[in-house]
Image 1: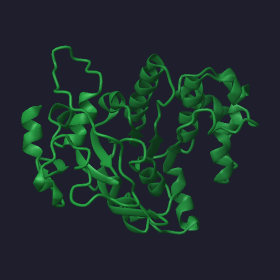
Image 2 (image 1 turned 90 degrees about the horizontal axis):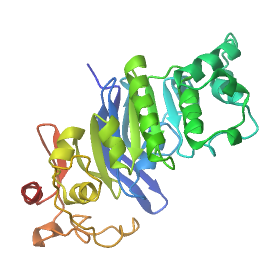
Image 3 (image 1 turned 60 degrees about the vertical axis):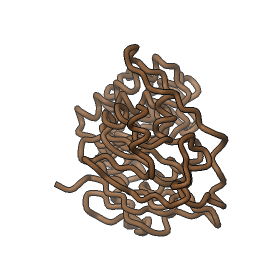
Image 4 (image 1 turned 180 degrees about the horizontal axis):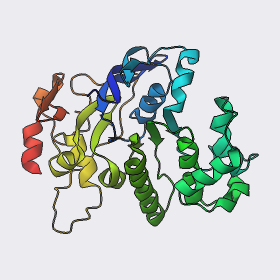
Length: 313
């Protein structure tokens, strides 16, 4: 059975800036895939390109076997009911002039679905995200951040999509509210058979919801594999740095702390050889060469010294 989403060698330029330099990954039906990286790594550009909201100069994006990169808006429109986007700002992404009823049922009007009972649909969608039906009469400014995020989830679910693209779904939320939202997303995925792509810099989000994860650096995946495997055995120095700085819920677990050097370099002038070498605490002369993508047992890595990292872990 083919993956529901297949992204292959996706490249995006904004003027002279090469934002995505060949990103490839698959998402199986019913699976959650998380993409992790620092700000500016290209995470948001990836999902916006998948959703047809950002240009991609080359590569392939297949949804349910159909090529969707580069197709016209008219051709993409029928697919929008199957691919839903959750934006990062839980309040700013909601129009302040519309009630919650109008916000979560707006997708029906956009798609010209005039046969729907919008009051009944609003009630159904609010129940799906565990909000009281009387919230339908509220406005976004009357919601907490967690409630606004649930409204965003309800709106995304209106057309019963098969794939959810979520941009930092827990950004700006308290830890307890983050946990409630992640539990909701997990529950909805199981109940509705959803597939999800989540981008985040919060590794605890990945640990909680993702089946597979990809580590993005300067618009390239440097490591990818089953989340459990990557957390247990990070093979790339960048992954190791990110995980070692993350609070570890298991008090018996130990991960040697590795500090990142400096800031990510400019995308306008990418470093030669391994693009991470100028910040890598384990860089050596061999890193002046360009690392190739290698996969072993479903665990991919782009690094010339991965075994050293594994030994340190």
